[in-house]
Length: 268
Image 1 (tube, rainbow, N blue to C red):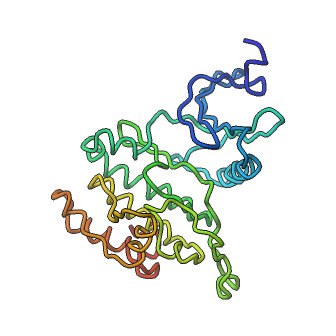
Image 2 (cartoon, helix red, strand yellow):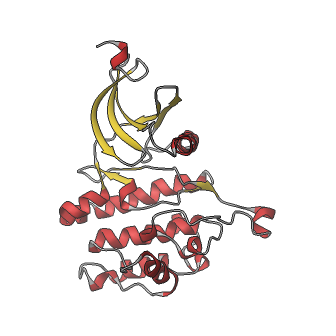
Image 3 (cartoon, helix red, strand yellow):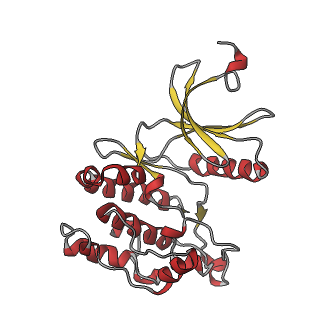
């Protein structure tokens, strides 16, 4: 194979794993080492390419600060005239969202290890001062034995502390995140905190256990209103195997006020 058929003369494209509006994720082989990696490769013909490039570089900077076995491992960010990409560990597993849709009973078998793994990964993220801000089943890969990798740190931000927090720093200009998993304070454009991730985690737990999210609505606006004011039904109403203890845990994670949720991920 000639260099022209390789990405940067280094990576051989093996298989497209996923594709989106601005990028594709490929399994690649690093020719020098023979290692299989995952590559998020930006599409260069999109109108918002410059913004997507900045976002991908930002995500690479976040990943550089993280080092945990349950968080996808960063390899390299590169941008040239021809290609802009991020390479990372290739973890051979589908995301949890796809697995819930395909066979939720199989997910239930691995749910305990899944929940423990996510909490461990999030504990490391928070210990480094980062808020993930897009915790959802789509961003958790899980293999057949329940081992996970937390992925997609493109929305992550540092928690605002000290004087900046006192004067209201860190307020959001726009609502960012996935509306199905978005915390009430994010809707109000308040500065995100570690408890913002806990709210999204509660919805993820709920969905894994029931196959549905706690809030359903015909329009995006109505969905946001439910996040703000509607109490969630207990997960046990849809899955009788959910224990009262788990119902209480999820209910606390889904409190509308951040201060009423757990003080940290390590309490979950």
